[in-house]
Length: 412
Image (tube, rainbow, N blue to C red; front, side, top):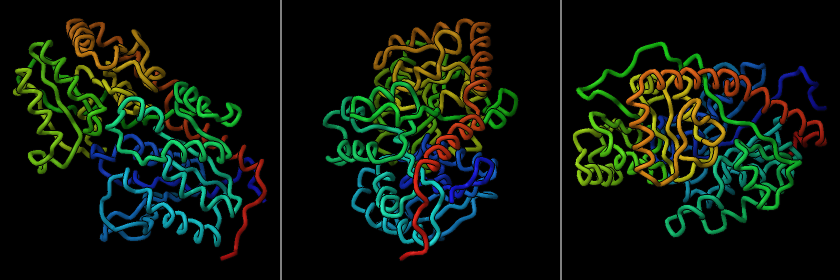
């Protein structure tokens, strides 16, 4: 029997490459990790029992790790117990799905929610025969990635075919922004089976009040935070910096600090900085822990989010919650989160001059910058709290659970 509207649910969150326990800023560690971790915590706070399934990528990881009260992380043995780039994980999803099917046959969750398309491949393998309600969040779509990256897209060749199949098979697709809904309907999904639930932010952790990263010798500081991959636009930020005097750019993310010198992307970006004559004004921090992020944000005058494309983008929300204006490319979910001109600026993607002009304008106007920062904080409080996100997600779970027959249990 399905739980009634007030009963706690047993919820399975499947996030094959993005562990909620991972440090942020690595090649495959970013917004999805934050999303899964925060959603799990908030759902547990609402009285649900949450199990997060993620791939075991180290022999040091135990099968089960308690994350916090009501949340358990299960490290699924699928593929070698070592780091593997996410675009090479598809061959291991049958093994991942088999693990889920065996475990859920004995104790089925009330609902399974897969995050990213390969998690959907594994989850669908288990939910189909066991008749478990299945929600799916893509976080990024192969159609968009292929459109923007072309031959540089390293996704498996059949990613888009899989994504369409998952979307047509899931009880509900949970899109994170309006832009994604348009992409999904173009793929043939019914709008009636799509719900829009944005990503969120914790405004008690990300707040304007608190310690800030100390300043250096430059008058202003701009910050770019996130995975250190070309599509995030760090090269664009460096090019823009050349037109913004007396300002430093802090680039946070990437490998651990001790490995920066050996990282190909860091070396490439340092060469770009030298070519633009700003090498002394660009600082790379390496990957940062979640507890370090608010301090980094509060230490900045502006946060830059100039990605070529951005399925949603949690960094703009975190910056806004800290009262820091955002300059973002006018793409994807950033069109929903950043209100131009109220909380920051949206600029043409791929245009360093537009990025520089927007940055220089705000840096020259401290009162305007403060007003936009305060407006960003208000926007977060009214629209993007994780409590709001979790409540909307729970509503999706209960709706799809009420429409599905009870799952099969107790069978091998």
